[in-house]
Length: 257
Image (cartoon, rainbow, N blue to C red; front, side, top):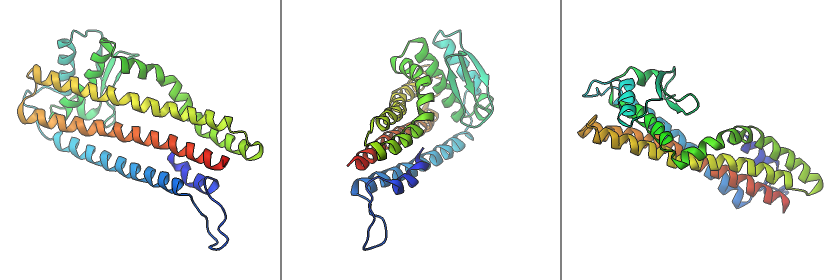
């Protein structure tokens, strides 16, 4: 959605023809939000790059126990008395996820058959979600309930706001705009709810790896580092979502005034 912010900065928030300079004038709030979004975008790129680098590094470190990612996942599920979840293989890189609808822990190419520290950490993290589901962890339940709402709102919100801006320009009625902002707000709420879900899954994974003696010493530290960088991607995503909501709020207020 941020790719639409560039034309929108031109289209309307806080600008007026600058007769003396022949250019455009942007308010301090506009430029502040614009710079914030750029900073968050750069931070997101840096975190993703670092995450890939860390996983690439620890994918080369052999797991002392010799277990593959799939075997680590199956062991963690058994130790937590979860017998209705299957461990499956899916293509792609960093596509690993737990699907509560199919009750499957889906592990990617680099995780399923690998016996590296990175593979063990990822497999345990995804099983952390399965444990959350089995224990009815409230944030996970809420996130699952938000999925269909967010899928609709994230697709339609931008166009609702654009239609609202056109309507507001001719009628001064901003109700449609605020409906669009509320829809974008649902995406931000989803991102914020995702934070405790992901951090808690990593905490469960690391605790199990330690208590079960599946991983110890330096390898446990490496697993913690890998999962910490993975969690930061969700933090950046949440900040980006909140910044997007604030941007639209300031844009609409600026046009109304």
